[in-house]
Length: 238
Ligand code: UDP
Image (cartoon, rainbow, N blue to C red; front, side, top):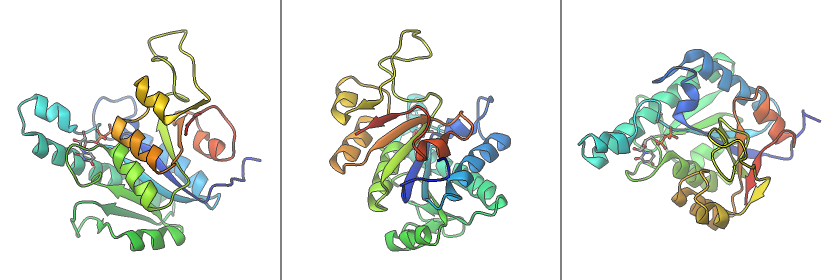
């Protein structure tokens, strides 16, 4: 039944673009609120929730460096973008009465807590949603890697990667009518076939820590909760 799940602690990874709605840049508050309600329905099941939100709706390091900006500076700008998204999500969650902490990999004490592992674990135990912001704090990484790293550190049982599609396909389902969705796929197959799940460093880190990645559609209302209850369509990378 949809009210039950065997999961105790999970990581939800979404891209910054998932908060953009139909616009082409930045934050779309109704979309942020909709995602917050998806998180709320899982929180109500008693699941401890970690989140990592990307920054691609505001700034991507690679785009900045392609335009002549120094790469590490551009990456720091990307990390700062993730902090803005995290604050927007915190605001939407707290509006729903869910205690939330933004925990930043780059210290900015006025805005977010610094990352201290034991403190973050304590928040989770107290059923506070922890949004891990500023990626890993290092340039040349992505928020997919940050999500995998924090999920490993927090002992999450799985990473739930919310996307626009309901799983991993052998080719882009937006471009090919005959694209086939995998129910299960191994980390190595994702790496060998360059399946667009997460970047290679994130996949390798998940593999080395036996952390399953569940790819599902965040556009499906009630989808996140349904997947946790074992319903709906998705792909497990393991
Ligand atoms: N970023 C980084 N180190 C990290 C995480 C992110 O340098 O550990 C930067 C990088 O420039 C990246 C940007 O932050 O382009 C936004 O993150 P990402 O591209 O992962 O966001 P998403 O595509 O998930 O929205």
